[in-house]
Image (tube, rainbow, N blue to C red; front, side, top):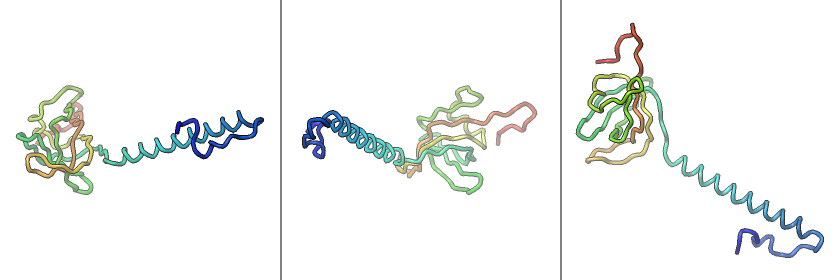
Length: 142
């Protein structure tokens, strides 16, 4: 069966309505495929939760490149794999070891339970940014 002749459009219409019926069947098939594609995309997007915000940096494990962060308002804690994260401060790259100098960081990560080196992690960080401090502000150091 092809896309142009679905089972509900296979009976030949009257001779004068052939073009009109063919156009309607094509529109129905196109609409059905469009709905199916959007449904599948919505399922794949909801498979993981993308989080982003400013978090308090509680701990940095240098050996496995793991970080422990918490939300300031709810105190919810997350253990994240930061091995592939892009780490920047003032738009410039920052080494992973230098994160220990900071208390507050902006993290973009996806929540996906997994395990790394025998440790249960809550997600994977994709982008870590140290907030910019202006002259005269207190530095973001411990």
